[in-house]
Image 1 (cartoon, each protein chain N blue to C red):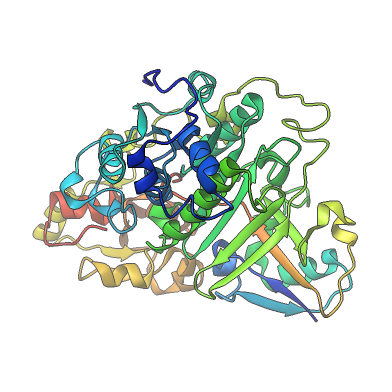
Image 2 (spheres, rainbow over the protein chains, first blue to last red):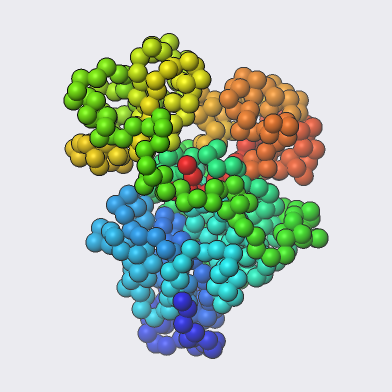
Length: 394
Length: 94
């Protein structure tokens, strides 16, 4: 938890600071006064992942005097394609420690407050109270609505960025008089309708760019200079290399920041976002359910020479990454129009990456009149873990 | 023919196109033409009651149609209509 130091406002810079930050004060838009504002600034960064990586590195380098970091995750190999605040040596470490170490290596003159917690409705207001603004580097809807609401209630701005595949969005919410996240999107999409980065993928460079737009906005807010993104939603398309901006208005009827707010305290954001209360990881540990088959059991069927048809319902580009050689590739989306390629009398086993899409395929085939359809539990990831480690995991 | 910009998450429902040109005098007509041509898109834009979903915004040029005339907002051939859904950016999801 945060340590209360640096509580008094600095009115000057040390000679070390003047030397380190010298490219800042020589610009009249910043000046010595601006650098002192940065030194006195207190920014809370939620998430030390793709967006948090450039945010943390550059805000530290710029001399933001106190940076809080909230993260409870651990670095894994799939993070390294974009989360440049962590290195290969950090795999398995807490992101919080790895990020703080990188930031303090760049700039030991600043203070990092570490919050090794998942931000929630119980702790958010307490954590937010010591900061001037929040930079949102999270990856899920419940936490984004939580950050928004806690920022509105704490009366501090929320520097927002979000990414998907090749596309990013950035703006500043909850600035006094400006719109909030709920003005833009009153409600989140139901779970499952929008693919996650793990399913949908993300260009590794993209969070770098969007995170730096957020860092730029944070520094401008601290310096009280320039034209901020308040009231503008910036959209970025990396494939087209096109920036656009849309007008963003405060909704006078917004339940959070409108003229007559009806939400006056933090709510249950998992419930608001329709997320099941059970931890999503639980099924991986659970027993094999009816209609499921474990990869090792499937391997025994293969070894015995049992007759069945294995279908892979992933996309062709995923099939190229790794596959089970005799599996027939029929992407889930193509299954309705290609169902005639399968015989309802055959035993069918479906698999995908981790089991969610193949479960949908199994449901579809059962409704289409197939008698024996099984879902390979845990997908090709589990096949790699339990049967054939030469199959690459992704 | 006004141009409709399709965001990345929805391109899978429109033959992977990033924009579609369709006839229509209002936003409502354009989106009706779009969803009748690409029926899989419909549930991503509209609720079962036929209301535009609250995590999808539609803009004519840079203005949100909620602050214009909503579905009745007029469009001309030189206008660009953008569909901008909510994205969270990360691991969360199924």
